[in-house]
Image (cartoon, rainbow, N blue to C red; front, side):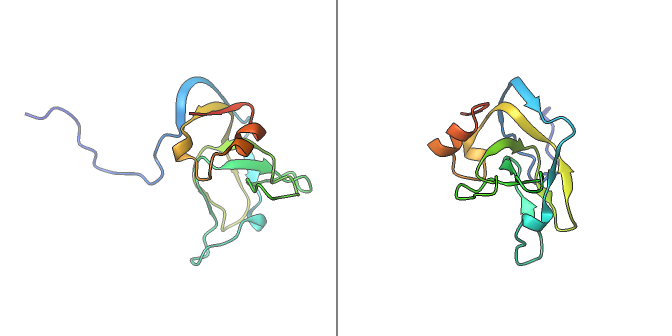
Length: 125
């Protein structure tokens, strides 16, 4: 007799990015993502994956995905995105982590020494 529950529904992007729950600090009131700065895919979607390092644009104060070669603030990430979001319909406010320990294999960009140095409050395990 099987007593373990069977998974009936798999929710997209329900994977865990946190490596530890000991020290975690979320952004108060979330971050506003600049939909105009996100490039649409072939279907018209502007999807940003859960775990993406996010940076604040100096001109608008809104947030965009980390771009190592940027010169508009996008080169300085300070927040990890809490969930996958599609901003095709305009700007959205989304939760993020300012402090935490994350599984680097689940971060949607390459976690290199440059990214690690730019995010001193984030630990990649």
